[in-house]
Image (cartoon, rainbow, N blue to C red; front, side, top):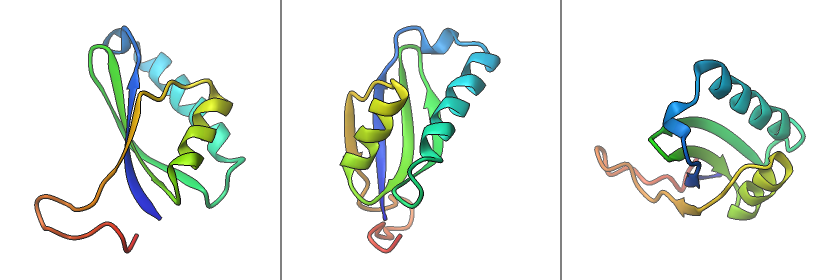
Length: 93
């Protein structure tokens, strides 16, 4: 599987309550449970108006399918190539 960073435009994301963030995460996990072995959420970061999510997936299409099924925005998808602190390639995941 490849590692991807997903940028999601989400106006007001920084103002979401912990409960709202948990509900969003649960909705995402509910969709992922219908896609076994195709996509896995690792972590997300919240900024004022965006979410940045890190996923493992075979291909970007699996991430787009997850977003479509869950009603989540996808602004851009970037495949991570290497860990900058170690130089390790992500191709072997």
